[in-house]
Image 1 (cartoon, one colour):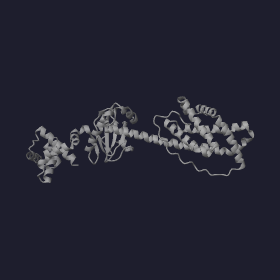
Image 2 (cartoon, rainbow, N blue to C red):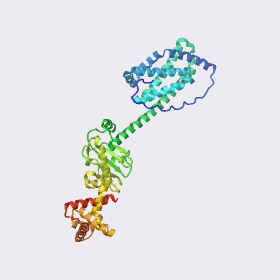
Image 3 (cartoon, rainbow, N blue to C red):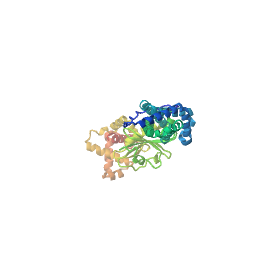
Image 4 (cartoon, rainbow, N blue to C red):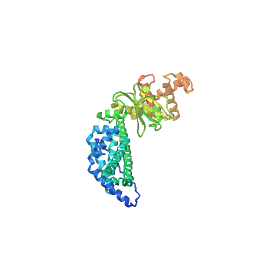
Length: 419
């Protein structure tokens, strides 16, 4: 029962399974008479095929709601599908060897087409069994009308008729499920490609509505991208654990990280909690407007992830903008570090490390030598002496704001680029 109007793109039907081998049997004379009765009635059914088709279509409309909708949508196509299936079925009763392969191909195509159209498998199997019942009843009725004394002989071929129906129901189920798997793979692959294009910034404007529907996210809205390293989290409960409760997100697995395209209705601060699983490295972009800007957010999330310590932790880009500037241009960061810290290179490495650690600690203590001395377990004057020595070696003044900014960025570059 093949539909005349097919979807715009149809899957190529997969290979049909080989027919099950049937055990040959020696037919008795009674079997030969039974076949003669079967063939005589089958030829009449074949001649009256349009009327038989009408009856089956009417029965489907009455008994199967899914087919009722199909008939209403495309009555001519459904009629042709039923007619074709019945013709192959009855022809197989007359010439099992010659017509069997064509009948199997017909059933396979019907199942694949109906799977693409979304007709439930139960409805499809019901239609095939209903067709088998109608053919069998037609054989009995015709024999009863023309030769009542031969009706008893049909019992000897009943198993052949119902074996045929069972074989095609099995074939239909196999074809339907194979097509479903192909359709599911196609949908998943399409979603993956749409998400990848958004994250790469290569998505076309015309594809945004489809991407929004496929990802279950609105085309317009505030978005952040979350980049997760330190373990494959996508598809596991751990992936959702990275985010706060009730967050709308689509996860995408890439080579280097997992990416979450997150609808940040309440701001990026509410998207990712500070506490994460041990070893999880999480980078959170600043917010962007609309799915069209997700590619920009992904680049920002990558930068934030690069700032996350190897031991794990969450880095929000908006909280680490100076460090993000350094990581966005490693070459310039390295040049700045060389310019601000290079004059210490002629010192003993241990001596240079002491000066740099003191400088970094002093900056972390907001320029308080007293607090820095407590962290470094030394006297306050020792801290001040080391800071003056740095100024003497580099020609920079830590009391000059512009020099202080450059020193801070240089220390950040040294810490991040030397990891």
